[in-house]
Image (cartoon, rainbow over all chains, first blue to last red; front, side, top):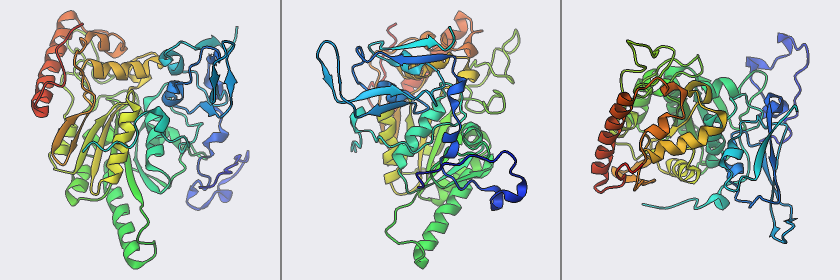
Length: 113
Length: 316
């Protein structure tokens, strides 16, 4: 599994330069295409209220919620060893995370105010 | 019987094997199912994908969201191609071109159109020939990719572009085709139904389907936001309500042994499930009651199969 599938399609490829059979030899290269531009509402995670249950991470259809091994201490003094952040490059803004969050720590905010 | 691979969210695999940037709709459950399916199957697998939403949206040239070897085939022959792939691997192992102990999984991903209607004979043939393939059906209950035409999986009273809701037609006239019963009648080792609201249960079923030798079939419920006319944020809520109202029952049949994996001791009225979806908006009170009666009958049948009351009476 090639990890670096950095492929940017040239502006004018022409059929002569295509791989034989027009196969795509770059597995997972759709990551080059940023679906974040589809979004009208952006999810914002309130790290103070988040209880690190991973439900948003589990239900995200675009894998746009990333689990970081980053420590976080809330103002109340509670320590967590994980932090959940949104990858805005790929988040399409569907709102499943905000709808499913058991403590309502995720707010959907308009992209343009 | 109840060997669990995953017990909670903490056990679930963290590595993403389904690339981001695919073009599935906002809030698409099929995208979520593919994400978890690829995590369950691991790296050594070949995916055979019938035409459908998943195929069209994941491989927009020159991009692909798949990190596995992947082959796209027509609607009708996904199961037949998977049979060929499985046999080819068996032969290559026999000839020594592939190490004999290498475990390569073959997984078919097909939609309801490619399974209920068009691909049924190929699927039946594959099950009969007993190929070691896992068949995953993501059921969004119509041909969503081409613009919401009815399929064999469309439920009673659902609006689609080919079953309009007016004074004469009241949406789909026929109930859903019992595809899992058809598949289970082939007496294959493992048949299961899964729901994206119950991910841990779904992952256990995927894992079990892969581990068991012989053909296995997983039928996954997959709400479609544009086709069902639901809010993009409500995908999981609708999936969960389908189980809580017993419109959808999560069960598995392992070597003929029937087991309900998500029992609902006190079920909700189907009204709660229907009112979230625009495709059932035209339904009158009387039609909702008729739908409820149909579900009651189904529940009775499930309880009889399970041999005890796993789905309880309507309470709210």
